[in-house]
Image (tube, rainbow, N blue to C red; front, side):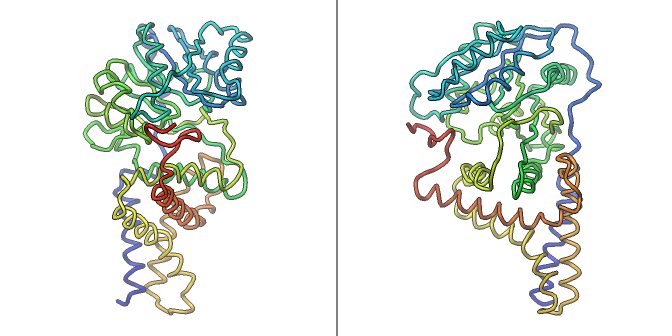
Length: 386
């Protein structure tokens, strides 16, 4: 077996493993339990929404939070994190016009202590303000996320029925047009590959994670995990929260069908920056892990394409066969996520292009770190930055 066929065979074997033995990640079948019974008593919930320069989105997202069809007590704490666009005023105006506007409380962040990432300090500020209500659950929601009217009721019902400590939804992202119509579903697919949802949801498995746009966490579990202070320096805070909570109890992570981010991704640069701002953090800023990741992505996404398309040059039938098999497996595994985003299954053949673009984004993330720009949130660098 020469180098062409050997590399293609290795890629095919890797895809066989991913499809058959990597936690059924690609099935995209983890959804909220619609059959979960209503609890005997609807617990008290405080929603915490960190917001920095979100005036354009707040009317839709905060309005949807205020309008939750929830029989228990709900308080929504919007944390204005040094916004310069009047986010706080827009939020108050939204509440003033809303029939359930009394649910809203707007607070502002104080000076951020050293060692705190900006978003985590905003969440901590909201938790401190909401603690006066002594909630049973905290609902952590991003300012660009618009829940469905019954989202909270469904989250709580499932959490209470299954005795979960955390329930999280990866909300639908706006795929936009052009490259983003492929890259956004691919981002969701790669996230599932990195954190296979069935393993996250298995109490016996070590894999843990969450999706920060929509997290319902039991107050006792958050306190047991050390509170938001334990996450103060985390850039990828949602997965860190999932790990911390799962050490003490079961968690659940699924895909949303009606809960969505209303933030538009208008061009390739938007998705590129979303990934590049934290990808190298995911690799723990390790050059060795970076090299291994890039080599792995090349094996998975570049080798099969070359083995197939370059067949007239190498004339290696085994390489062509293994490459075709690997390419077919990745396309088939992408189909359920494409269906979630109402994209045709044949788009799965373009997954290699998405994989290579994400490899470039990951390398760019490392370059940004090496140039001391680091991970950012809302235009600010990491812990302790201005």
